[in-house]
Length: 190
Image (cartoon, one colour):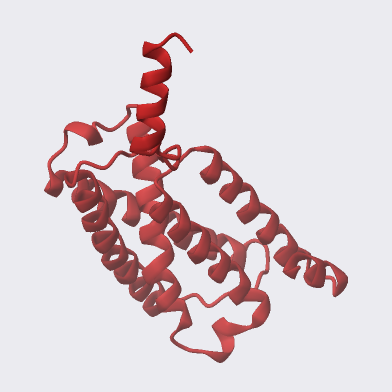
């Protein structure tokens, strides 16, 4: 719906953002990530994308920190899990501190890439964004904090024996009575 509104009023840069986020979310869903991490990515990217055309960055001074404090951690976990699934990172054999360190490192990397994008968007493409030294340092601090929390969540998830892969809901269990009837039918040849 938001993409239609943005297209109607000619905010084509916002339309592009929504299309890109939609593509990322489709890839995320098809990757079979564990549901809590997939949901966190979907929610945080959606809020971050809506914030720009809604004008939240200009009207709510702290919203940039909240968005960096949630989105980067979610993205870092997804990148970490994706790299583990294609065996670029040995997540299944890693100890909790190693998993946290990997997520934090990837979170800072994502944050730095985003800050490069903000600079390019402002200085090369003329987009209006909040940039500056203080903004960059605050954003990177929130990126690190959110990645630390997200890394701890992933380490706890993996440490509890849960899989990096989404598990579908189990099939409806067969009641004891149904199982007994089936076993009796098999025993009698029915």
